[in-house]
Image (cartoon, rainbow over all chains, first blue to last red; front, top):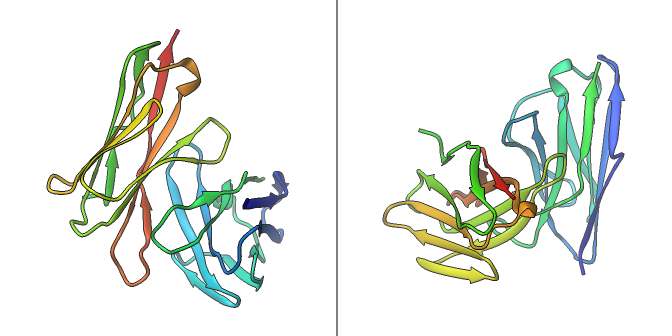
Length: 112
Length: 112
């Protein structure tokens, strides 16, 4: 069966500090991978998606970036965090685009 | 007009009653429809997928799709306090990359 991992689970970072969140998927090959952000009490905002190694599409211009160095690894980064980057960051995978997405446990980021 | 709309709630139902959650979408050529459950502080969990008009039942859950009316609903029979959560409707938008759009969610509270 497929499993998706995210770490860390929680993170408190000062404004201006860098960020690196990691997501890995087990039990499947060449998954579609997604990064979402959910602000407190808000809906899911798609940040990035990837259909293969090194292929990243950005949905929203911002100070975040994503990379996919391996087939089942997806990384979300920032060089300098803003207060507005606080939120619940969710990684998801799907077999095919437009079909069921399965979410990881998430990382709760607080920027102070 | 938002692409996927849901009543924000909260929707309160007594234990044992039927909870009815509704969702409308704007893209007439949407193809795939999903319901997710999200407990407070947790990541979304897929509970139902529906692709064709009509009803689809899975245990206490029934998803109903009406493409002509651009409407999808989720019925929860014999509601339990453990069903108290936010329910997210998601729609696969027919674009070049089959983007999945999430609604803002409906908060459900089942009163013992």
